[in-house]
Length: 178
Image (tube, rainbow, N blue to C red; front, side, top):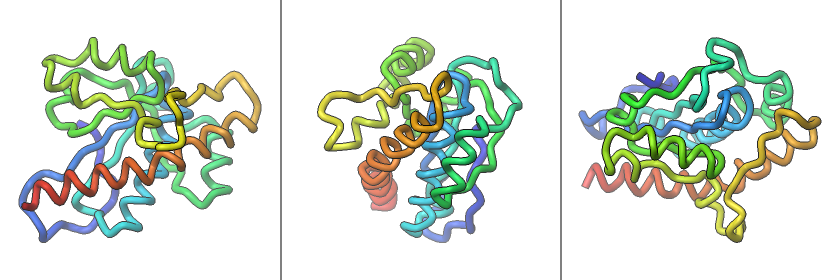
């Protein structure tokens, strides 16, 4: 089961928290970066306890490893949390997740094929689909084989999409309470 972010207990509802999992290839660059950014946005929005954020990879190559040092450096420089251990996404997680956020179209296709049901496949979205300025370019490029500038660009894209994603998550949480 995806781990929860640290948060205070919710008094608003006895329901399980709204669960979001970001997914990239190895879970050491893009997805932990996106999870760190959304966790901060969730905390700042006062949604701790109502939303949990996690990340994983479509492949298990780096399972148990920390985030890439360049990811850590970019996140720390921007003031984000960097606590992370890479994990491999499992099909049975769909049952516990409300949104599965893919970082590029390849991840989206892999996750939709892995989904046990059509309803689970419908939970898979592209991160940049939440950025109104993305203009159809919805992939977050993998910075792994490049230099530090690629990690900076990745963070810029993640932050640009995080506000729209937070709005969608907030709407879903409020819809549950209604």
